[in-house]
Structures are given as C-alpha cells and as structure tokens.
Length: 290
Image 1: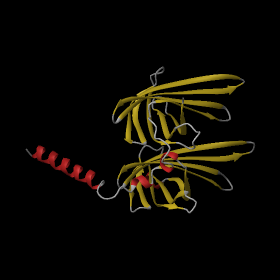
Image 2: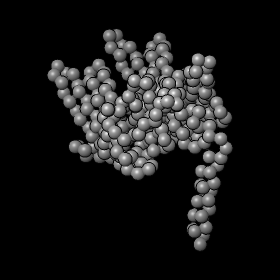
Image 3: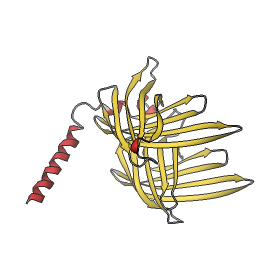
Image 4: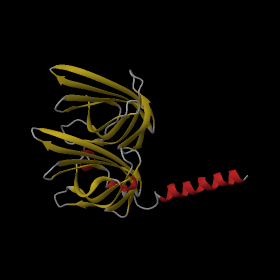
C-alpha cells in the first residue's frame, strides 16, 4: 500500500507540475524560431545558431550551435560545440533565464544567463544574452560571452498568405568544406499524429586527388513532433552497414526564407558514434525536394 500511495503521490505532483507550466498566456511562441550571430576577435571568429522551440507556455527548448574559426597561416582550424538547453524558463513576454547542465557535452557543462527578445522598428528581432559556461569541477570550458542573435525571417510566421507545409517528404543539403563536401539527406515518413520516422544518410566526398566517398545511413524510428512547427530527436540507433552504435540528438523547426524558396527544416544535430568515439556536430538547413 505504501508503494502504491507513493506512486500516486509522484504521479499527482508530476501532473500538477506539467499543468502549471501551461497555466497562463502562451509566451513561448514569441520566441520560437532560428537565430544566428557572427562575432570576430583578433584571434578567432565565431558563428552561432540557436534553434528555439516551445516546450510549454513558459518553457523553451534551445539547440545551441557554435563554430569557432582560428586562422593559422594560410589555413583555418575550426572547433564546433553543441549544447541542448531543455528547460529554459520564460520570465515574461520578452525575457528568459538559462540555468542548467548539458550532461551530453564533451565536458558536462553548466550554462547560465539571462536573455531578452528585442523587437526593432524595421520588424527585425534579436535575442540579447550574456552566458557563462562552467565545466565539472569548475573546468574552463568557454569564456563568458555576450551575444546578439538575429532572428531569421520566416514567412510561415510573418506572411499569412504563405501556407504551412507538411514534414512528410525528402530533404537535402550540401555542406562544402576545404577537404570534402557532405550531403545530408532526410526522408521523413508519417508514423502517427505525434511521431515521424526518418531515413537519414550522410555522404562525405573527400577530395584527395581522386574523390573518395564515405556513406553512413541511419533509420530513426522516433522523431517527436513537438508542435506544428518543431521536432526533436534523441535516440540511439545502429549505422546500417557497420552496425556501430550511434547516438543522434537534434532539434529542428520549419523555415521558409522567401516566397520562391523551398521549405526547409532548420536543425542542429549532434551525432556520436559510441562504438568508435567519434562526434559530429552540424547546423543544417535541409531543403524540401520538389
């Protein structure tokens, strides 16, 4: 009886907590979207992307992508970081607080800061935020920084004549780099009202005098539909050919950049090959193929 009573107590508390997050006005939708910033210093330049989705009326999920570029003579070295902030609290219509630990980061990192959404007369919007990064045992992970992230205009939100689009279909993008070109392809299939499946392939073509290709394929059975415009992945799968164990985590949202532009899924994705201890982090804008 005690175990049953304890179970019922926990269930009631959890239910009350979930309901409390949806009490009051829906402030989260004001923040939802894709944001970016570039900043330059003497020793590096940094590119930031946020993909912000709604978790509850007063909660946000944020995928945070950082790419630092360091010039070294005639070459440039790059370092990428991805953080997933999964319990960001909205204070009012324009401010929010970050105070959580990303345990999946290379070094488990505590991220703290207060941000605000500012709207300008020309219709543009920015998130302004100071953030600090503290690793376990107070390790230095990244210097505290102030960032102003500009919201990417999205015709789904900004123009009532632009129709929303269905996720179902084939999406693709190419990422050219110095030594290779990577083609990412998603085939999104309907599963039920709250879940999709995705066949995800990455074709890396390395330019080494002759072109060498490396193909990785994953079948992701549980892609969660967070609301009409957002999706999330957090799953361990097998690579189709090697059978390596792969952890895939991603946060994405729908994006239409222009009237003549194809619909896109803007997503931050982190792929960890747990068998070979290899991590890949990307910001992708996957274009829907007509």
